[in-house]
Length: 515
Image (cartoon, rainbow, N blue to C red; front, side):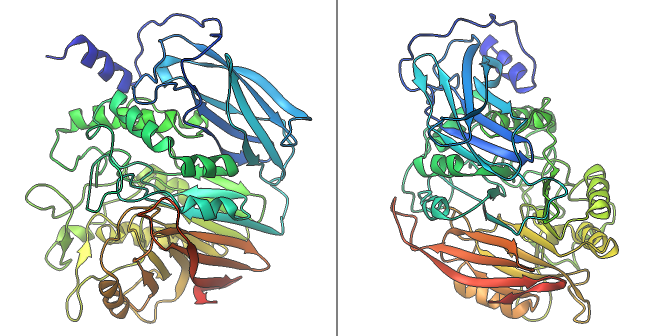
């Protein structure tokens, strides 16, 4: 039997609400800084973007240390960092149902320019954030500079890679999953999670609050607008649709997933269209940057088929595809039928000069067995080879201009040629792939193993996992350029960064080339 507190937590996770008091008058004072989790912007459009904050004077508590009343939050957007020229302003209500988070969808701004924003509540003022609006849909800007990153485990390292990123001249940040980690993993921890593995809404809120309290992460959110997708650790390691890693019954796992999805929305600058309803939350979308580029943000967790040939405990594994015949079942999907159809339509309708598929995983085939025979990891795209072929065939059939796939998850830098048939040396290269290493999470395997994988898979052009970091990219001048950034170490709060390798993709010539 659930007690009343657990029952209300389950209701909240499913999006149900009990009656709450109406909006209160602004409190004159907070016990401590209510803007402890910082500010953020995201999803830029030609006329606006989303700006975000969450009131949490005590972030160690699931309720943020606030009573369950609505609190007015005033916001301002200015054309200059001194706020001498106010472009827009208003007041939003921060309500307990959504953890006193605020998501303001700005409109009426000018395209392709920088703005500054801030929030006020009671006697408190937030720090100032900065956002850039997108170009007009019919505009052709000369360049787009962005960074992409993934996998930031609190315990395994400091988020110091955001320091060089903040110093970069960027328009946008793309985050590709594992914004938090639900579990304590691996070794050599430099700091500890403050609460056990989360299963309830309050517990996920506390986990997000701990991560959002990181000063380097906050600085990166203040500096640039972000667009984001999730991977598995925002909910549960290697989860697939309604299947948990540890055999939890589906109906129980969906309660957990609902709690995790709600906390995800509450802590990121997402538009209202992405607000979850219980265990369902649509986050896949297209973000255009004029006629220069389209970003296609994919969701590879919520709708996927369960992994095949699991271990006796139900976990994903590395298998011989000749012995695991289910792996080639044409009914199996990574994206789900609706998202697959949507993506094919988006490819068909695209008029962008460059098309960036932003997703979580390494898409290129990776045979992990040297010599004869093959071994594939079932949680990645290698576990869904027919679905991957459908996606790549869609790119080829639609003649998508300059397709570039970006990914994360594997905690290593990888650069690849993408083909419809990886086993046929004559199969043409149809797209380019760049996978970023992790912000702090430890590498998937040792560097000498990466060298062996490169020898076994000729379409993989580069692989390195001994350093954490991100990728800095630029589109302009008829090329896509990528710099693979590595940190000297993430075991100390401040470290040096360097460019490990540079690659370019020339207009009309799929396949990355070493710069």
